[in-house]
Image (cartoon, rainbow, N blue to C red; front, side):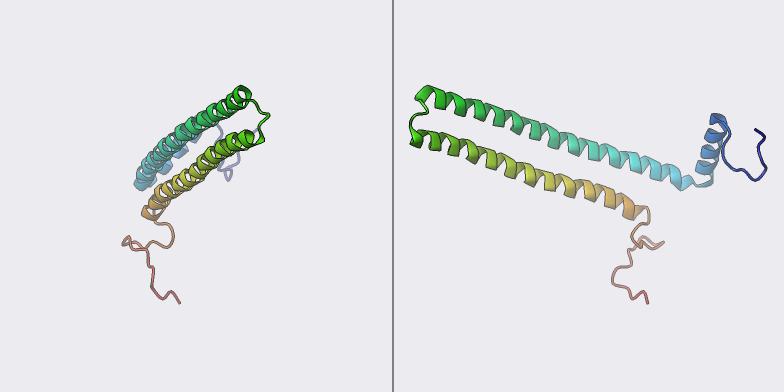
Length: 142
C-alpha cells in the first residue's frame, strides 16, 4: 500500500526507532525524566519485594501455627471443650496479630510508593508546579 504524504504513522521498526530518537533529541529533558522514571520504578520494586518477603514469612508462621494447634488438639485430646477453646483462641490471636501487621505494613508500603511516585511527579512539573519549581500552593488563582 502506498504511503500518503499526510500519513504520519511509522511504516517500519527502523522508522519507529528514528522517530523516537528524534523526539528524544528534540527534548533533552525527556532522557532525564525517563531515567528518573526507571529509578523510581526500581525503588518501588525494592519496597514491594521487602513487603512480599515479610508477608510470606508471616504466611509460613501462620501455617506452622495451624499445624501446632492441630497437633495440640490431637495430642491432648479434643474431648475437653476448654482445651479446644484455649488452643483455637491462641491460634486466632496469632492470626489476628499477623493480619494486623499485614494491613499496617501494606499501608506503609503504599505511603512509601506514593511518596516515590509523587516526588517524581512534582519534580516533572505535575500538580501545578510553576517553572521556578514552586507548587503554587496558597496562591489565589482566580
